[in-house]
Image (cartoon, rainbow, N blue to C red; front, side):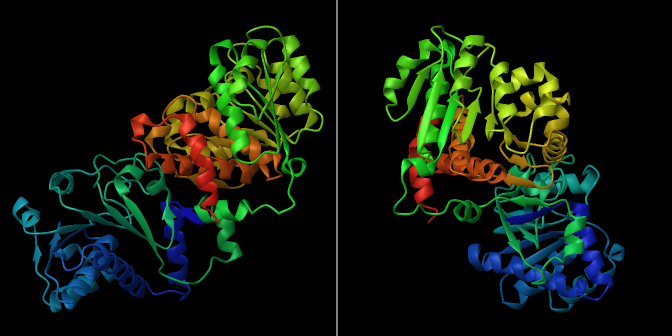
Length: 502
């Protein structure tokens, strides 16, 4: 997994290395410029570059970059959005070096300058920005965004809060962002993520983080394709259904038959060996379309009730994982939830199970490390009592806080999904806007349940499930437009996605 840091963590990481002599700030600035120049050579070879600089270290990176571009004979110009007298330290050193080698600087960004350039480099503000952009800086950002020219951001697009992803007044919309040493949270959380384009992490040092430093960081990581491949090993040639886990999905109602089918199909598709669906009687007939599943009618009605819960509880023994809530509607499933929690069976609680859990907060104290909650922000608000605005502004902190408080896994859904066991947070960024449709959550819950049933640890199962959902949606999108993508298309792409990991 790739470490993700806040602005404060990055600042402390740098300062401690500079203070004890493990790193030299001027050397690191040069390495940052080399990373930027490598991207320009790879994607914008010999195009005329305009580097727009502020007075801090972000501007210093821009000055060093200008010197490198100029030395390789490519036309480049700089804009310094302040008086050169305000420059100090490494930024001043690199400004003077750029002047010495012949780089020309302008004091104002104009449409004429933009028109004479092919690619723009944003070196205005770095990760330390903490107040809204205003004045000439806001004017410059507006001009860049209106130019239609490709933009490369240095470390983070100017105007994006590096920790929260908040837009501080206005922000550069970049095509690529070259960041240094670690991902920054604001590059992976919206709305900031939407300004970054492709994010390339360029190392400044090969030195690993020592245990003391790791203890001072919050253990936030980006979950990647390589992580999913590591956690999903190829099956042995003598594998059989009994070895691949027994899953039980308690789902559906007359109003939400499709949710039960999607939930169960996804569980099957990720490889659960024996998959049973416990559904109200009115739903069972629909499972003729999914013959691989063993559908059990838990009552003769259309919705979940006490009798249905009792019958479903009888199906729990020998099950390796259970999922409750997808499409269950307003029927009472709390007795089933309570029984599953008491049995300590690895479980996914989704949708209506979460809504009913919120009505009986006493059950939250019975959650345990084998339970995965999969709320979207509104469901999380009902469970936690936090306003939705607080959840959206700090999804990493919310997921970690409540996973620790409830002693379970919290998978907080979003365009960037935050998954936590209370000790660490994993971010998943796979997927596309096609997932913003009914049924996607049912597919996710089914996938996680299938992975749990195969013996994958809860935090890993939740992480893999989130990644595979998004990656499968990306595969499906190769053939379908976002607006045409249906949840069942994602299920069909799961097999191709998993095969692609090996």
